[in-house]
Length: 362
Image 1 (cartoon, rainbow, N blue to C red):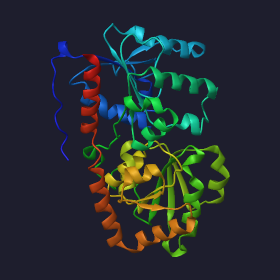
Image 2: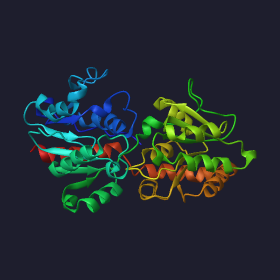
Image 3: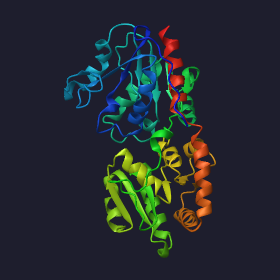
Image 4: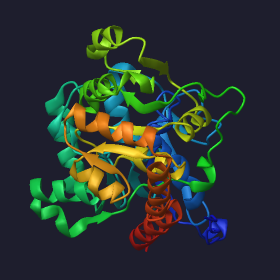
């Protein structure tokens, strides 16, 4: 897949788009919102003057982001006033669920999931952030949902929003995820088969199902479960009791994750709830088969290219064993996965955002 050249607009004629740049902070940039911005911003800059706004962080100046001072007790108040840092005439893009109160122009809000209502862990006080989220939904001129599942959830909870919601899927840049097992410094393995789970930082990621499945895989398979990223503290005892078949890598670079997936027997995606499920298409783009819990988002994103399984460790163990034993089945899933990934394109997403921003800039 070749990345299409974005339409160039003379710099003086580019409408200004101010956006919430806080997801570009180094400690969270590898999460889904940060990856979305990393892929969309270079494509949008050809048509718009993109102005990031955030509290100060280490990379902000290099990225050309306009910042306000870090002041813990005033963080929320300063965010609410942040659009005042930009000249008049801007469209404001709330990239991650929230809009400031002092928006002088029109606004677009991107909604990634409804975890604030389903699982508000980490949002304290939860009632306050729910209130801010609901306020942003009501004030936004247009709302982007990253999946139809998320859009349907929004409409079910807030029926009046339906007229201003548009679905713009996240994607994966195939050029940037070309598999490279065995690269210097990569954690790719060749000694024994392994399956991968990308992060278990929340209980909804369902690490217990993945561990139980791997434990039920026949001993002669010598299978290991490798878990990247952070792991919720509640899983500490489970991980200790499951050594040595479970290995935690901690945070890895994008290159290391790609290399790990490219050599894996499968990606395990047992998450009970996601707003999109980016690991599914990242794995498929690398030719890694995907085993996923049968949920609405897995059906939307994976289509028929993954094995969608019930919450039953034995069913997962049998699916893993088939992939280890049958190169033909693995090849078939790899082919189906790459065909499925073609449905998702950052170029297409950038065009949709461009049309949306342009319509509000007139």
